Image (cartoon, rainbow, N blue to C red):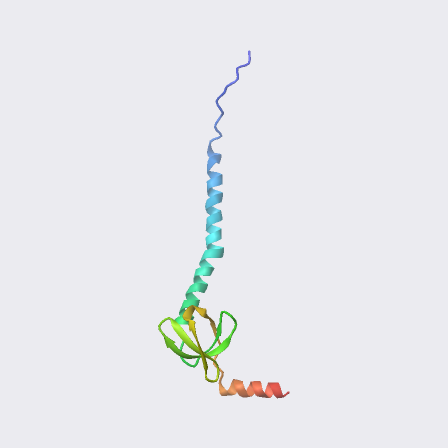
Length: 113
């Protein structure tokens, strides 16, 4: 006589594998996506807090200008002589390196060639 059991047999120790894979997936996502994004945000906030009058900047729209004045959360930039525009501080995407007399003269010699 054959007796069929309706109760499933438990496999035992293999039930933790899906949970472990899920934890590893979240850990990988944290280290590959979230941490670098937080670091970029901190660097951008530091750069925007260190803005000073006279800095050459690029806005998030790609406009190159010079910082004329800073008032709280706004930055007045000069896009042409005598033309000032007010931007929010987070709209500044990049501070360009300062141009010294040596680099300016080197650039002028390079253009002449």
